[in-house]
Image (spheres, one colour):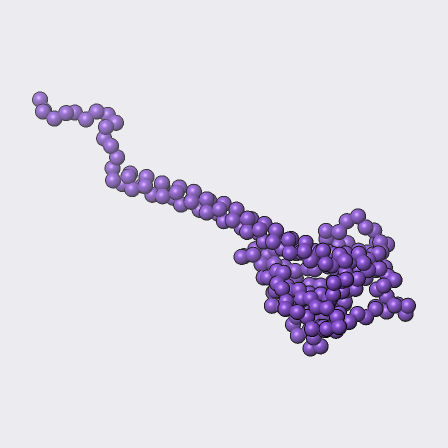
Length: 214
């Protein structure tokens, strides 16, 4: 008769190999789970960052809308030395929008001066969307919506504008996310009678003299 205790069935434990295999499988499960959590956090963070950037741009453009809404003259946009310019006149003086090196700025001055004041940044990290100009002006009596256009509804092919409209189109960069921007403003103090001369030409305004020649 042996003095040792007999080992009961199922009491043999696990071998070192089985333990290592189990730890390996657990490691794989943890890696997959952590990867999923990191991806979810990254997506949430990207959405939050994009939403915050869009809110900031919306607030900036909302302030700009208050000025453009009461503009009584808007220039023809132009590209000078790598910078896009757009001037407009209000009852308080002249304003100039400029897009240079990805920064959209506004400057103001009062006639008879033709020198804009210090520029104020409205938005940064902007880029031109393909070959589309960042500033587009639609004049009264024009039909800019005769063909299909994204985000435009409720107008027909024969719809003619009663006022000058200013359209800003950019692509904003927020980290690795591209944010398309397409904003339309209506200058309600403009119409065909004060935008065009009797000869059908655009009326000049001294606010346009502030744009650099080259």
